[in-house]
Amino acid sequence: MQVVDTPRAIDKNIDTLGGYMHSGSSQEVEFARDLVTRGICFVVTTRSGAPFFAPSRFVGYIDNQIREHLANADKDGRVTNAAISRVLGRDPEVNPELDGLYQRFCADNGIASRSAGSFGLRRKYWDLR
Image 1 (tube, rainbow, N blue to C red):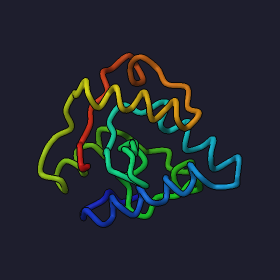
Image 2: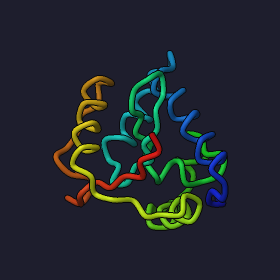
Image 3: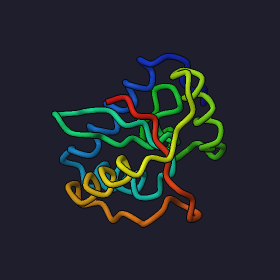
């Protein structure tokens, strides 16, 4: 799969993920929740007046969807992080305020949050709110 190269490509994937989070399909909802639970780096936007946290490993590939994401054996957050950073012109940052908002986002959306990202790494964010 090709990595994103425009802000619109990132935004489109965020919309796709948001649709999964609020769909009537339990498979789509669980898929989205699992991505957020395991995420380390997130693009943070505003959707419906509230912060929305989109994991880079999903939003970093052009036109990503469940089927493509699950079939992509080569998906790698380091690759998507670099692509998103190129598009946005900056790297993600550790941000305690956003980490608190992430915890609230998880609670509000029935997501089991962890105290740290996968592998015990500190979560990082691109804040686009």
